[in-house]
Length: 383
Image 1 (cartoon, rainbow, N blue to C red):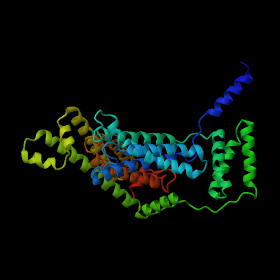
Image 2 (image 1 turned 180 degrees about the vertical axis):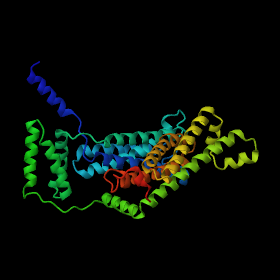
Image 3 (image 1 turned 60 degrees about the vertical axis):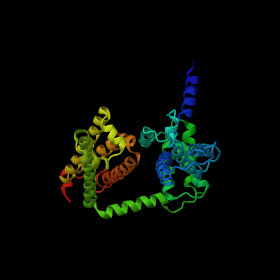
Image 4 (image 1 turned 60 degrees about the horizontal axis):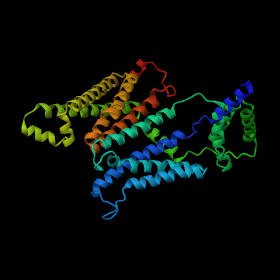
Protein backbone atom coordinates (compact mmCIF):
# COMPACT_ATOMS: atom_id res chain seq x y z
CA UNK A 1 0.00 0.00 0.00
CA UNK A 2 1.42 3.40 -1.00
CA UNK A 3 2.15 6.19 1.45
CA UNK A 4 -0.69 8.22 -0.04
CA UNK A 5 -3.21 5.43 0.56
CA UNK A 6 -1.93 4.96 4.12
CA UNK A 7 -2.36 8.69 4.74
CA UNK A 8 -5.91 8.62 3.35
CA UNK A 9 -6.79 5.59 5.50
CA UNK A 10 -5.40 7.33 8.62
CA UNK A 11 -7.43 10.45 7.80
CA UNK A 12 -10.65 8.47 7.38
CA UNK A 13 -10.07 6.75 10.72
CA UNK A 14 -9.46 10.07 12.50
CA UNK A 15 -12.70 11.45 11.08
CA UNK A 16 -14.62 8.61 12.71
CA UNK A 17 -12.91 9.05 16.08
CA UNK A 18 -15.46 10.21 18.72
CA UNK A 19 -15.40 13.78 20.02
CA UNK A 20 -16.75 14.69 23.44
CA UNK A 21 -19.42 17.38 23.36
CA UNK A 22 -18.37 20.64 25.06
CA UNK A 23 -21.28 20.55 27.51
CA UNK A 24 -21.58 16.77 27.61
CA UNK A 25 -20.92 16.48 31.35
CA UNK A 26 -23.62 19.06 32.10
CA UNK A 27 -26.24 17.05 30.23
CA UNK A 28 -25.03 13.87 31.96
CA UNK A 29 -25.32 15.51 35.39
CA UNK A 30 -28.90 16.56 34.60
CA UNK A 31 -29.77 13.04 33.45
CA UNK A 32 -28.23 11.39 36.54
CA UNK A 33 -29.87 13.84 38.96
CA UNK A 34 -33.26 13.35 37.28
CA UNK A 35 -32.83 9.58 37.39
CA UNK A 36 -32.05 9.57 41.13
CA UNK A 37 -34.92 11.94 41.96
CA UNK A 38 -37.36 9.88 39.88
CA UNK A 39 -36.55 6.62 41.67
CA UNK A 40 -36.77 8.18 45.15
CA UNK A 41 -39.98 10.12 44.45
CA UNK A 42 -41.62 7.15 42.71
CA UNK A 43 -40.93 4.83 45.65
CA UNK A 44 -42.10 7.48 48.10
CA UNK A 45 -45.31 8.16 46.14
CA UNK A 46 -46.14 4.46 45.85
CA UNK A 47 -45.49 3.87 49.55
CA UNK A 48 -47.71 6.82 50.58
CA UNK A 49 -50.57 5.89 48.23
CA UNK A 50 -50.52 2.15 48.96
CA UNK A 51 -49.08 1.06 45.59
CA UNK A 52 -52.03 1.80 43.29
CA UNK A 53 -52.27 0.12 39.87
CA UNK A 54 -53.32 1.55 36.52
CA UNK A 55 -55.43 -0.95 34.58
CA UNK A 56 -58.22 -3.46 35.15
CA UNK A 57 -58.66 -7.12 35.99
CA UNK A 58 -56.66 -8.14 32.90
CA UNK A 59 -54.33 -5.24 32.14
CA UNK A 60 -51.71 -3.63 34.33
CA UNK A 61 -49.94 -0.55 32.93
CA UNK A 62 -46.66 -0.66 34.87
CA UNK A 63 -44.70 2.57 35.19
CA UNK A 64 -41.81 0.83 33.43
CA UNK A 65 -43.86 1.28 30.23
CA UNK A 66 -44.08 5.03 30.79
CA UNK A 67 -40.35 5.01 31.37
CA UNK A 68 -39.83 3.22 28.06
CA UNK A 69 -42.01 5.80 26.28
CA UNK A 70 -39.96 8.66 27.75
CA UNK A 71 -36.74 6.91 26.73
CA UNK A 72 -37.97 6.62 23.14
CA UNK A 73 -38.79 10.35 23.05
CA UNK A 74 -35.41 11.17 24.62
CA UNK A 75 -33.62 9.10 21.97
CA UNK A 76 -35.57 10.54 19.01
CA UNK A 77 -35.40 14.24 19.94
CA UNK A 78 -31.64 14.80 19.25
CA UNK A 79 -31.93 12.71 16.07
CA UNK A 80 -34.53 15.08 14.65
CA UNK A 81 -33.73 18.47 16.20
CA UNK A 82 -30.41 20.30 16.26
CA UNK A 83 -31.43 22.92 18.84
CA UNK A 84 -29.66 23.10 22.17
CA UNK A 85 -32.93 22.83 24.08
CA UNK A 86 -33.56 19.45 22.42
CA UNK A 87 -30.43 18.07 24.11
CA UNK A 88 -31.50 19.54 27.45
CA UNK A 89 -34.98 18.05 27.13
CA UNK A 90 -33.46 14.72 26.06
CA UNK A 91 -31.26 14.70 29.19
CA UNK A 92 -34.28 15.31 31.44
CA UNK A 93 -36.49 12.75 29.71
CA UNK A 94 -33.75 10.11 29.68
CA UNK A 95 -33.31 10.51 33.46
CA UNK A 96 -37.07 10.24 34.00
CA UNK A 97 -37.36 7.25 31.68
CA UNK A 98 -34.46 5.29 33.18
CA UNK A 99 -35.73 6.06 36.69
CA UNK A 100 -39.25 4.79 35.99
CA UNK A 101 -37.94 1.75 34.12
CA UNK A 102 -35.25 0.58 36.52
CA UNK A 103 -37.50 1.13 39.55
CA UNK A 104 -39.30 -2.08 38.50
CA UNK A 105 -36.12 -4.09 38.01
CA UNK A 106 -37.28 -6.54 40.72
CA UNK A 107 -40.02 -7.75 38.35
CA UNK A 108 -37.48 -8.47 35.61
CA UNK A 109 -34.97 -10.48 37.67
CA UNK A 110 -37.42 -12.76 39.50
CA UNK A 111 -39.74 -15.48 38.20
CA UNK A 112 -42.50 -14.22 40.51
CA UNK A 113 -42.29 -10.65 39.14
CA UNK A 114 -41.49 -9.50 42.67
CA UNK A 115 -41.35 -5.68 42.81
CA UNK A 116 -40.20 -5.86 46.45
CA UNK A 117 -37.33 -8.30 45.78
CA UNK A 118 -34.62 -7.10 48.26
CA UNK A 119 -31.63 -7.19 45.84
CA UNK A 120 -33.51 -4.87 43.44
CA UNK A 121 -32.60 -1.76 45.48
CA UNK A 122 -28.82 -2.48 45.39
CA UNK A 123 -29.13 -3.05 41.62
CA UNK A 124 -30.72 0.40 41.21
CA UNK A 125 -28.13 2.05 43.45
CA UNK A 126 -25.30 0.16 41.73
CA UNK A 127 -26.54 1.40 38.35
CA UNK A 128 -26.54 4.94 39.77
CA UNK A 129 -22.92 4.51 40.90
CA UNK A 130 -21.94 3.28 37.42
CA UNK A 131 -23.42 6.44 35.91
CA UNK A 132 -21.46 8.53 38.42
CA UNK A 133 -18.26 6.71 37.42
CA UNK A 134 -19.06 7.47 33.77
CA UNK A 135 -19.46 11.13 34.74
CA UNK A 136 -16.08 11.10 36.50
CA UNK A 137 -14.47 9.61 33.37
CA UNK A 138 -16.15 12.18 31.11
CA UNK A 139 -15.04 15.08 33.29
CA UNK A 140 -11.36 14.10 33.18
CA UNK A 141 -9.29 16.84 31.57
CA UNK A 142 -7.59 15.71 28.38
CA UNK A 143 -5.08 17.45 26.18
CA UNK A 144 -6.80 19.77 23.72
CA UNK A 145 -6.58 18.52 20.13
CA UNK A 146 -7.14 20.80 17.11
CA UNK A 147 -9.72 18.54 15.44
CA UNK A 148 -11.76 18.12 18.62
CA UNK A 149 -11.67 21.83 19.41
CA UNK A 150 -12.89 22.68 15.91
CA UNK A 151 -15.83 20.31 16.36
CA UNK A 152 -16.71 22.02 19.64
CA UNK A 153 -16.29 25.46 18.09
CA UNK A 154 -18.67 24.57 15.26
CA UNK A 155 -21.16 23.28 17.83
CA UNK A 156 -20.92 26.61 19.70
CA UNK A 157 -21.57 28.68 16.57
CA UNK A 158 -25.31 28.35 17.16
CA UNK A 159 -24.88 31.22 19.65
CA UNK A 160 -23.78 33.42 16.72
CA UNK A 161 -26.72 32.27 14.60
CA UNK A 162 -29.18 32.97 17.41
CA UNK A 163 -27.58 36.36 18.15
CA UNK A 164 -27.00 35.26 21.75
CA UNK A 165 -23.18 35.30 21.94
CA UNK A 166 -21.84 37.01 25.05
CA UNK A 167 -18.26 38.10 25.75
CA UNK A 168 -17.39 35.00 27.76
CA UNK A 169 -18.73 32.65 25.09
CA UNK A 170 -16.90 34.66 22.41
CA UNK A 171 -13.58 34.20 24.20
CA UNK A 172 -14.15 30.46 24.72
CA UNK A 173 -15.08 30.07 21.05
CA UNK A 174 -12.08 32.07 19.89
CA UNK A 175 -9.71 30.06 22.12
CA UNK A 176 -11.01 26.81 20.64
CA UNK A 177 -10.43 28.11 17.14
CA UNK A 178 -6.91 29.22 18.11
CA UNK A 179 -6.09 25.63 19.07
CA UNK A 180 -7.71 24.29 15.90
CA UNK A 181 -5.64 26.79 13.87
CA UNK A 182 -2.48 24.95 15.01
CA UNK A 183 -3.54 21.73 13.25
CA UNK A 184 -1.24 20.06 10.72
CA UNK A 185 -4.29 19.45 8.55
CA UNK A 186 -4.62 22.47 6.22
CA UNK A 187 -8.41 22.05 6.00
CA UNK A 188 -8.85 22.27 9.77
CA UNK A 189 -6.34 25.10 10.15
CA UNK A 190 -7.84 27.04 7.22
CA UNK A 191 -11.43 26.75 8.44
CA UNK A 192 -10.37 27.78 11.96
CA UNK A 193 -8.53 30.83 10.59
CA UNK A 194 -11.54 31.86 8.51
CA UNK A 195 -13.87 31.58 11.50
CA UNK A 196 -11.44 33.57 13.66
CA UNK A 197 -11.45 36.33 11.07
CA UNK A 198 -15.23 36.36 11.02
CA UNK A 199 -15.45 36.50 14.82
CA UNK A 200 -13.21 39.58 14.79
CA UNK A 201 -15.44 41.35 12.28
CA UNK A 202 -18.15 43.86 13.09
CA UNK A 203 -20.79 41.44 11.79
CA UNK A 204 -20.72 39.55 15.09
CA UNK A 205 -22.79 41.00 17.92
CA UNK A 206 -21.23 40.41 21.34
CA UNK A 207 -23.56 40.79 24.31
CA UNK A 208 -22.60 41.50 27.93
CA UNK A 209 -22.07 38.42 30.07
CA UNK A 210 -25.36 37.38 31.69
CA UNK A 211 -25.01 34.37 34.03
CA UNK A 212 -27.59 31.64 33.57
CA UNK A 213 -29.85 30.25 36.26
CA UNK A 214 -27.41 27.50 37.27
CA UNK A 215 -24.45 29.89 37.37
CA UNK A 216 -26.40 32.34 39.52
CA UNK A 217 -27.41 29.50 41.84
CA UNK A 218 -23.83 28.27 42.22
CA UNK A 219 -22.55 31.81 42.81
CA UNK A 220 -25.22 32.27 45.46
CA UNK A 221 -24.21 29.03 47.17
CA UNK A 222 -20.55 30.05 47.06
CA UNK A 223 -21.39 33.51 48.42
CA UNK A 224 -23.41 32.08 51.32
CA UNK A 225 -20.77 29.46 52.06
CA UNK A 226 -17.91 31.92 52.11
CA UNK A 227 -19.89 34.36 54.26
CA UNK A 228 -20.12 31.58 56.81
CA UNK A 229 -16.34 31.61 56.79
CA UNK A 230 -13.58 29.05 56.71
CA UNK A 231 -13.54 28.48 60.47
CA UNK A 232 -17.28 27.72 60.73
CA UNK A 233 -17.21 25.68 57.53
CA UNK A 234 -14.48 23.53 59.08
CA UNK A 235 -16.47 23.21 62.32
CA UNK A 236 -19.55 22.15 60.36
CA UNK A 237 -17.55 19.41 58.64
CA UNK A 238 -16.24 18.24 62.02
CA UNK A 239 -19.80 18.07 63.41
CA UNK A 240 -21.26 16.24 60.40
CA UNK A 241 -18.36 13.77 60.26
CA UNK A 242 -18.82 13.26 64.00
CA UNK A 243 -22.42 12.27 63.29
CA UNK A 244 -21.12 9.80 60.70
CA UNK A 245 -18.91 8.30 63.42
CA UNK A 246 -21.85 8.06 65.84
CA UNK A 247 -24.17 6.54 63.23
CA UNK A 248 -21.65 3.92 62.10
CA UNK A 249 -20.67 3.07 65.69
CA UNK A 250 -24.31 2.68 66.74
CA UNK A 251 -25.01 0.43 63.78
CA UNK A 252 -22.06 -1.81 64.69
CA UNK A 253 -23.13 -1.85 68.35
CA UNK A 254 -26.70 -2.88 67.49
CA UNK A 255 -25.49 -5.65 65.19
CA UNK A 256 -23.13 -6.98 67.86
CA UNK A 257 -25.81 -6.83 70.55
CA UNK A 258 -28.41 -8.64 68.47
CA UNK A 259 -26.01 -11.51 67.78
CA UNK A 260 -24.57 -11.82 71.28
CA UNK A 261 -27.34 -10.83 73.70
CA UNK A 262 -29.98 -13.30 74.91
CA UNK A 263 -31.94 -10.67 76.83
CA UNK A 264 -35.50 -10.63 75.42
CA UNK A 265 -36.22 -7.05 76.46
CA UNK A 266 -33.02 -5.85 74.83
CA UNK A 267 -33.83 -7.79 71.68
CA UNK A 268 -37.26 -6.14 71.49
CA UNK A 269 -35.67 -2.71 71.97
CA UNK A 270 -33.17 -3.35 69.18
CA UNK A 271 -36.02 -4.47 66.90
CA UNK A 272 -37.36 -0.92 67.05
CA UNK A 273 -34.20 0.37 65.32
CA UNK A 274 -33.49 -2.39 62.78
CA UNK A 275 -35.56 -3.78 59.91
CA UNK A 276 -36.41 -7.47 59.69
CA UNK A 277 -33.89 -7.90 56.86
CA UNK A 278 -31.17 -6.28 58.97
CA UNK A 279 -31.98 -8.60 61.87
CA UNK A 280 -31.92 -11.62 59.55
CA UNK A 281 -28.60 -10.54 58.06
CA UNK A 282 -27.05 -10.42 61.53
CA UNK A 283 -27.45 -14.20 61.68
CA UNK A 284 -25.72 -14.66 58.32
CA UNK A 285 -21.96 -14.85 58.79
CA UNK A 286 -20.93 -13.34 55.44
CA UNK A 287 -23.40 -10.44 55.55
CA UNK A 288 -22.66 -9.81 59.22
CA UNK A 289 -18.87 -9.59 58.88
CA UNK A 290 -19.07 -7.57 55.67
CA UNK A 291 -21.51 -5.08 57.19
CA UNK A 292 -19.60 -4.73 60.46
CA UNK A 293 -16.27 -4.42 58.63
CA UNK A 294 -17.50 -1.61 56.38
CA UNK A 295 -19.20 0.22 59.26
CA UNK A 296 -16.03 0.00 61.36
CA UNK A 297 -13.85 1.23 58.49
CA UNK A 298 -16.11 4.22 57.84
CA UNK A 299 -16.27 4.98 61.57
CA UNK A 300 -12.48 4.89 61.98
CA UNK A 301 -11.88 7.06 58.91
CA UNK A 302 -14.55 9.57 59.94
CA UNK A 303 -13.07 9.73 63.46
CA UNK A 304 -9.61 10.28 61.94
CA UNK A 305 -11.07 13.15 59.94
CA UNK A 306 -12.39 14.79 63.10
CA UNK A 307 -9.01 14.44 64.84
CA UNK A 308 -7.07 15.80 61.86
CA UNK A 309 -9.36 18.81 61.43
CA UNK A 310 -9.26 19.58 65.16
CA UNK A 311 -5.46 19.50 64.86
CA UNK A 312 -5.75 21.98 61.93
CA UNK A 313 -4.26 19.45 59.50
CA UNK A 314 -6.85 20.39 56.92
CA UNK A 315 -5.47 18.89 53.73
CA UNK A 316 -4.99 15.47 55.28
CA UNK A 317 -8.34 15.69 57.07
CA UNK A 318 -10.24 16.61 53.91
CA UNK A 319 -8.60 13.78 51.95
CA UNK A 320 -9.53 11.23 54.64
CA UNK A 321 -13.09 12.64 54.82
CA UNK A 322 -13.59 12.23 51.08
CA UNK A 323 -12.20 8.68 51.23
CA UNK A 324 -14.50 7.78 54.15
CA UNK A 325 -17.60 9.19 52.44
CA UNK A 326 -16.81 7.51 49.12
CA UNK A 327 -16.42 4.14 50.88
CA UNK A 328 -19.68 4.75 52.74
CA UNK A 329 -21.56 5.68 49.55
CA UNK A 330 -20.14 2.94 47.31
CA UNK A 331 -19.83 0.10 49.80
CA UNK A 332 -21.73 0.38 53.06
CA UNK A 333 -24.77 2.19 51.64
CA UNK A 334 -24.92 -0.20 48.67
CA UNK A 335 -25.18 -3.09 51.14
CA UNK A 336 -27.73 -1.18 53.25
CA UNK A 337 -30.03 -0.79 50.24
CA UNK A 338 -30.45 -4.56 50.26
CA UNK A 339 -31.63 -4.46 53.87
CA UNK A 340 -33.70 -1.28 54.19
CA UNK A 341 -34.03 0.85 51.06
CA UNK A 342 -35.82 3.84 52.61
CA UNK A 343 -33.42 4.21 55.53
CA UNK A 344 -30.48 3.66 53.17
CA UNK A 345 -31.78 6.38 50.81
CA UNK A 346 -31.89 8.84 53.72
CA UNK A 347 -28.38 7.85 54.80
CA UNK A 348 -27.06 8.13 51.25
CA UNK A 349 -28.57 11.61 50.85
CA UNK A 350 -26.97 12.75 54.12
CA UNK A 351 -23.57 11.33 53.16
CA UNK A 352 -23.80 12.90 49.71
CA UNK A 353 -24.58 16.34 51.18
CA UNK A 354 -21.63 16.02 53.57
CA UNK A 355 -19.43 15.04 50.63
CA UNK A 356 -20.55 18.17 48.74
CA UNK A 357 -19.66 20.25 51.81
CA UNK A 358 -16.20 18.66 51.95
CA UNK A 359 -15.61 19.16 48.21
CA UNK A 360 -16.69 22.81 48.51
CA UNK A 361 -14.20 23.36 51.36
CA UNK A 362 -11.42 21.81 49.29
CA UNK A 363 -12.20 23.99 46.26
CA UNK A 364 -12.73 27.24 48.16
CA UNK A 365 -9.81 27.05 50.56
CA UNK A 366 -7.36 24.28 49.64
CA UNK A 367 -7.15 24.23 45.83
CA UNK A 368 -4.24 25.87 44.03
CA UNK A 369 -6.46 28.66 42.71
CA UNK A 370 -8.02 29.43 46.10
CA UNK A 371 -6.80 32.53 47.98
CA UNK A 372 -4.10 31.54 50.44
CA UNK A 373 -3.89 28.01 49.08
CA UNK A 374 -0.15 28.28 48.61
CA UNK A 375 0.31 28.42 52.38
CA UNK A 376 2.13 25.44 53.90
CA UNK A 377 0.31 22.93 56.10
CA UNK A 378 1.38 24.79 59.23
CA UNK A 379 -0.40 27.89 57.96
CA UNK A 380 -3.67 25.98 58.22
CA UNK A 381 -3.37 26.25 61.98
CA UNK A 382 -4.79 29.73 61.88
CA UNK A 383 -8.53 29.76 62.66
